[in-house]
Image (cartoon, rainbow, N blue to C red; front, side):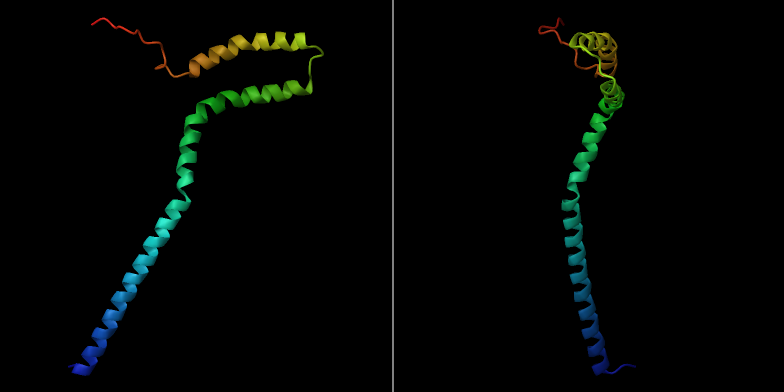
Length: 112
């Protein structure tokens, strides 16, 4: 059997370990809070990128086309306007295809 002195020593060690554990737990919670606040911008950035994904898939080829056209520029402004007019129809069709369907005009007084 253990003597009273040894039991007191073990109880004191137990209390010290419990206090150390509580301190470590508080430090860990503070670190988690600091990490969450430091990375909150990532959630916003990922939601913006999800919202822009359909537009980016549409605009990336257009940007590539425009860069390629920049290399072989037409000689006059009229040629550029004609080229833009040729592309306006197909681009408008793509835009209508990717546009959300819920943005149509609603009648002001619907009949019941």
